Length: 286
Image 1 (cartoon, rainbow, N blue to C red):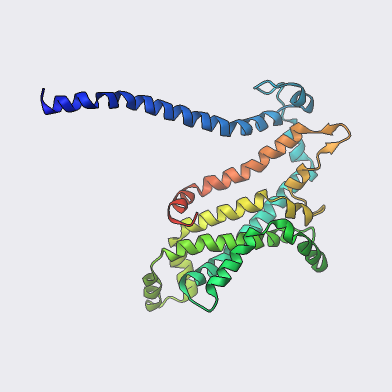
Image 2: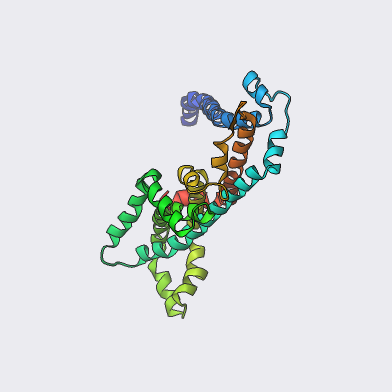
């Protein structure tokens, strides 16, 4: 028997086992995906049913499907204004957090000053505290200055937790950019603001995308501050969802429809920054 024939005979069991391993891996991955997707499907199913059918039937497919729950949300000002209020303060928080975190992260990345490491740690330590710790100070402060029950109140409150995380992520991306680029641009006559906007920010576009994603997600899903710092005019959707109880009980179909709508903005953000997220997880501090 030649050497090639011997090698083929030796590798035959491994080649035979390779499709089996791939099949097992595919089955495990498929089971995991089904496990993750099942709650999403179930809430979509509930949103297409009446409250009586939601509680009385456990069929896998929707029973007597209807879009009345979605119609109620898009025609009732209480519901659709809550959705717009939440979207408003989330966008405000994301814009403010990025505007503050970009120059701050650049300073931590490029300059050394007295107490820089301590300041950096102090910023991030705010993220370690639960939102309930700052609930009463925020409530009294915003009530005193007239910001209570406005999107600005929730947006500014969220920056206390989002900005440190944004600075931490962006500083990791910026530290990976060689300092020679900064020096070359200054020699070529670029001012610091012009260099930062036209040259430096495009180099860390993936980091900005990842940071924007985390800022948006934290502000979108946070409930405690959003519910406490608003009352009527700026009430977010997550707060309205907790007030669906009536004398006839919980309107589960309406609550499920609102839950589906809260998922869609997150899916849209992930879709638009999906390429940046992939690069960010490979290169940054996430």
